[in-house]
Structure formats: C-alpha cells, structure tokens
Length: 471
Image: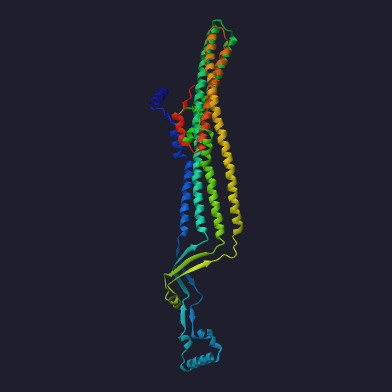
C-alpha cells in the first residue's frame, strides 16, 4: 500500500528540469547577478562619491560654535587699576592725583575706588558665533586632490571592466566545459552501445561454436570497461554542471543550448594585438595610477607654496557684559600662511611620488610586452586547435569505415573480437580528440575576445560565422 502511494505521489509531482540556456543569456545572467561584479560596481560608486566629495574642497568651511567658560572670579576694573597701569602713575602728577582721591575718600567717607569699579565680565562666560574660512590659494593642492580622486574612479572602473573580462573567460570555460562533457558522454554511450552489440553477437557466435571462449571474454571485458568509462563521463558532466550552475546561480543543473563550434578563419593576429594594447583595462589602470602619482607630486609641491584664505566671524550671542558690548559683532579678513619648516617629510614624499611615476612607466612597458606575448600565444593556440580539428576529419572517416568493416568481418569469422574493440575505441578517441580541439578553439577565441575588449562580437563568431561541431 505504501509503495503504491509513493508511486502515485511521484506521478502527481512534476520533475523539475532547468530550461536550456544559451551562452549569450548565460553571460547576461553573470553580468547582472554575479556578486563579485556587484562588489566591483559598488567600488566604482564609492570612488565616484569620493570624487564628488573632492569637488567640495573649493567651497568655504562654515561652522557654528558655542563655548561656555567658568572663570575663577569676575573680571573687574577699578580706577586704581587704571591709574597704576598708566605711564604717569609713578610721576609726581600721578602721585598727586592718588593723594587727592585718598583725601576725598577720607573727607567724605566714600570709597571712590570701589564706587567707580566696573564689572568687565562675569565668571560665567558664554559665547556663540559663526565662523567661515574660504581657501583662495593652496598651491594647487586642491586641484591635485581632485585629480587623485578622479584617478581612483578611473581605476575602479577599469578594475570592473577587467573583472568582467575574467568572468567572461570563466563562463566560457565552465559553459563549454559542460558542452564538451556532454558530448564526451554521448561518445562513451555510443561506444558502450556498440560494444554491447558486439558482446551480444559474441555470445551467439560462441554458442554456435564459431568463436573461442576467449573471444567472447574479450568482448565482455571491453563492454564492461565501456560501461565504466561511460559512468565516469557522466560523473564528469555532473561535476562540470555544478560549476556552471553555481556561476549562474540556478537551483537546478544548468543545461547549455549553445554547442561547440569552429570558424573557417580568424582575423589577423595584429588586429587582436593592436586592439588589446589600445583597450585592455589593465593598461588603463596603470594610466590611472600614473594620474594619481602626478596628483601626489602636485600635492607635495604645493606644500612649498603659501596658503591664502579669507576668513570671517559673526557673534550670535551677547552676554551683556562690558567686554561683550565693546567687542565687534563681526570681523572679516585675509590670511596668509607661509611654510618655513615642515615636519611632514614633503621632500621625501615628493621624491617617492616621482619614483611611483617611474615604477608605473616600467610596469606599463612590461605589461604591454606580456600582453603581446599572451595574444600571440593564444592566437597560435586557436589556430593550432583549428588545424587539429580539421586534420582529424579524414581520421574520423577512416575510423567509421574501419569500425563498420571490423564488425562485419567479425560476424563472418574473418576478424577477432580484439579488432572490433580496437576499432570502436579508435573511433571514440578520434571523436574525443576533435571535441577537445573544438573546445580548445572556443576557449582561445573567448580569451582573445576578452582581452581585446571584443566580447560583444562573440555572437558573430558563434552564430553568423560558426560551424557547428557534430560527432
């Protein structure tokens, strides 16, 4: 009863299969959903925000502030303090004046010194004001900082482009790796089926006494080994599908719909070399680093120049004390700061920035050389794969014919089981070798298109100029 119920449930629940996905659709999925590329796009946004922030360096800095101060005593000013601070306090006139005040105090009984003492400020002092500082000339350091920020933005953009190229190569390797594994599985299945028929024929011929037992055993052993190889190919396909499925973020095994292909010819090697040297993001990253190094040079040079700025201050709160009343409500002015001795190591930093420019120049020259070698190597590997694929066409025809004749001869007792097995395995090896050559060609082509920035032309090579690989 339980078994019947399980069968009924399985019949009701549909089996989920992944829809076939073309290479172009798979690439669109990678571009839009890959977390690594999303992180690089966020890095570009971050750099752009920092570049926008650098534009504000030309704006004035305006702050509003408040201070509360507690003094030990009120600030008072008496006539005696004023007289004592005057230059004439120690002269005869000053002494006579002090004597007059003392006599008046004694005659009237009034302390004129206390009576005329003024409260300049209370113990509790609260001030509030708006302050503004506007840089007028900074020795080029503001524009240099903006150039550095722009260089970092360019660097982030080129890093994103380079990561996209790398993901394009990864997708090609995983996608067509699944296609190759699927075709190899098909080849191994055909070998298994052929050796199965051969084994069944061998059993019949042994029963009729037409072949020896060892012939039947050879057929059986070859058939059993073919089953093992077919199962191994199936596992290889599953492993390849895991990598592609994870890259595409699918919940079911990804099924490619674009097959392996070749082209009759390729554009000249010089076209790929010139395009790569003109557009490769890695070289543009070095250009961005050179721009940043130039900005650092300008920053360190700017430390040798004076700074000119405009400043202003406006009081928002008046405590009502004599000192606050006498103080002006606002003040503006121009300031100049001339660096005489600097402890930031500007001389060493300037030399380091020049060394950075030299380093970038050497790195760019080496990168151009390495890219040229990479393009030439990949181009020749693609041509070699094409030559291998086309060169094996006659071997494939021979393998098909040899297999057909060996099977026919074995049925007539004119060929051994080993001959048939060798023919089947030779046919499978030729098919596999041609598939591997086609896969190598597609892998080299995608690498050439990636590093030369021509990824959008892949569709032309595959759909319009491509020749589908058939077993």
